[in-house]
Image (cartoon, rainbow, N blue to C red; front, side, top):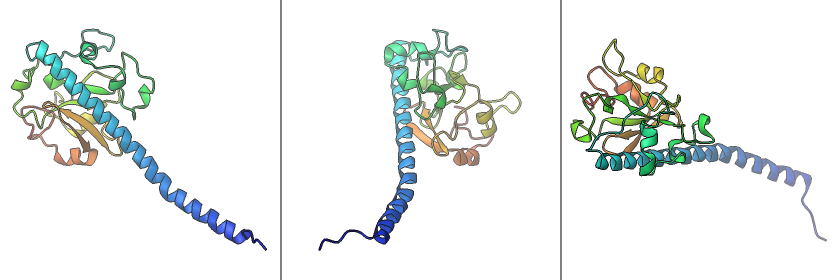
Length: 207
């Protein structure tokens, strides 16, 4: 005679499935977050390529900023002909831009590399491999002023006050450097390494 599953056996199987789901779901959620961080890195690399192309057509000058995202003279708009579309300006972990549009951005440029500052070309930046050009922003500003007038150098506290999204990707954020490479840095790492003498935001002290 054919024998079916007993109630105890069904309960055991259900319990095993529940345990497996409890183990796998956090891992899947983390994998999804990591995938979004990779998309963000891809966006920043595309921004870096667009900036490089712009420099080739404009005497090696960095693109200009704007104090309004509606201002067509700002880099958000001047990068469009070089391939920067609305989707590439929206980090998938940025809750403000689930529906990206032309005047939205998840990324801000470093004001040190913007006219009329002294570092307006790549060749003028002493250490482009360790100097940050573009950061993730939580405010939508197209550029950030990290250095304060009081102390004269960038600090982690300045990062927070400027709305830099330092923990957008599981405690880390992505940073585009002047040389074009993208690197994630944790908020813990930033707080430990900043000092008056060393700042990866200030070209004069970047190490």
